[in-house]
Length: 289
Ligand code: HH2
Image 1 (cartoon, rainbow, N blue to C red):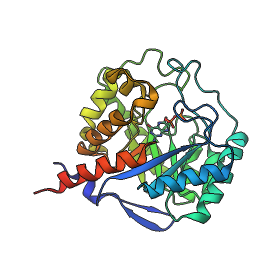
Image 2 (cartoon, rainbow, N blue to C red):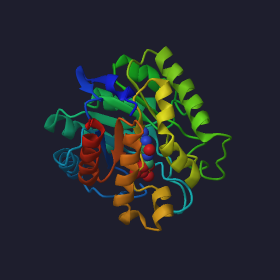
Image 3 (cartoon, rainbow, N blue to C red):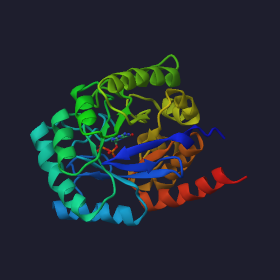
């Protein structure tokens, strides 16, 4: 196999994280009322922090906390409602603060807003995950750079409300790679050192686009950055298997396995325990002589 990922190291809050030794699992913690698969799960910030601790016990390497759903218009009704930076901060900060005193594990803030990223990084988060790849708020790059925080740049076409209307590409992998390259240049120019790229499964992509991106994920290695993918419970898995969102664990694990075989360093999932076990096996196969 490749193995480009051997050289990838990032620094989170002054601590080195070697992404090449094995695959890494990012556990999803949505503190939103309307996320597509796990919205409205927690009554209090302590409950949310408990869920994050459980994911760490199950093998998560990073906890990704989000206060705004990006659910697309379509299968789950209307798209998610945008929230203000203040509301997003009100949702995520108490959870980040509580979690940061309970664990040293890296906490990532899933946001497209510079104000939210700033507040989160000042309160214990160490990574920024921007699903817009700096398209919605370019100031995020400056915030990440100032805090010396790694930045995840995800590819999206359109906005969560419009992205699934009629996504079309001449060659989805090449176009995603070129658009990500532009985001990487922008982040790099702002002074961000550790940049992670993500093809954005389900964000302005048809079923075929998502499958092609996983099959040809290795082509994103040309960007020279670690790759993260987020297949978790998404519509393309439901479409292939004909299963509702609560029955997509095996499909998620299979997509994660394929992505890691094709070069992904980090997989963002809700079902940490199952995916961690899957990827331990995949890592053992990758290492075999
Ligand atoms: N997908 C979602 C949210 N954030 N971040 C990255 N880097 N990559 C992804 O694929 C990704 C992401 C959507 O999933 P989820 O958090 O489960 O749903 P919602 O946006 O409705 O909260």
